[in-house]
Length: 398
Image 1 (tube, rainbow, N blue to C red):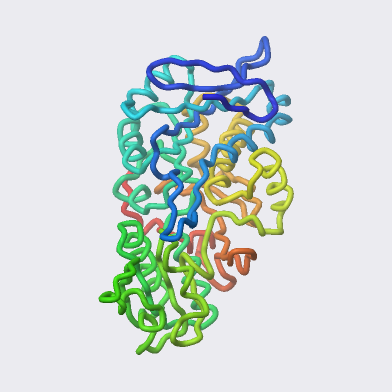
Image 2 (spheres, rainbow, N blue to C red):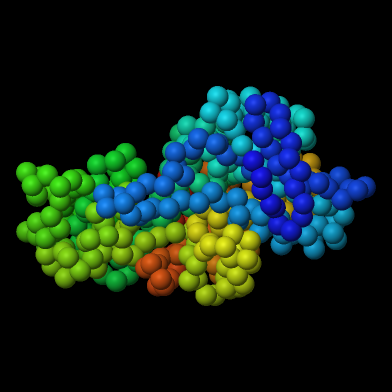
């Protein structure tokens, strides 16, 4: 495996049936290491082709976001006398993530890990290390269970939850008075999870679900009522169509093809993300440019989450003047911690579930149209807590 990190040389080290790659530290300095953990056989990053061979959902590992953050932190690192380094850890198919991270932490002295792993690996790792002196970052999974029944005191989330993303869309619909919603829902488990999150947000912000209509991706004429867009969107009264199709096979055909001329939101039309490449305020263009120089592609939500994970630790080190993991973890969880999100509102981790507060960007494919929380949605302590599970609603027990 060969990798380049920022602009420094890379050393290849093999051990323990997995590989890790890092930039060598400057002589005489003790580096602070971030571990970035992925899998060689992660199907999430397979290129899924549609019926006609088109690549409809192309996923990229967000390690480039972490690389940008490490590079940005060189100046503050020099002022603190610390060199920040990123260590890429690639687990093989047979590797147990808990055993692997335990050995790497002990051998390399890594106390902060950015997890780019399948959901079950993240759950297992967070549970196993719940009482350890580590900090783990979830930069990939929006699943609400990670902030609820499967939460952990060591697992911090820089990617927004499904609840946060869907709350942002629901706030926008309420503000526009598009309160009657027709839902088109796919049959995959990911579609079901996202659909359930939107239904919760609809109840929270007093939207009415006119109907929920399942669809399938099929050319079978006998299932025409579940594949034909005019049929799927007819015989109902609604203001907007919410479509959830994580495969991208059907949702792209919904705009401009519905029985009634209505706006489309969800996985097509207006979407919600942690980040979008067209965001043009609060220093975002400069961050997008820095990312593009390293990654040679546009910055996405997971990239921003990996960037935010590194920047959170660097900020904690700068404020506490400590590199002790327990000091950093306590500061991240405190009301004193803030992070410049480049989205117009400072972020901070919720002490009840370790979710990073942050604005959510509502966007089409080539423009950010709004930023949630939408103006007028207020909270007694922090307006960002109108997005996602507030403390009284949380099922997390830390």
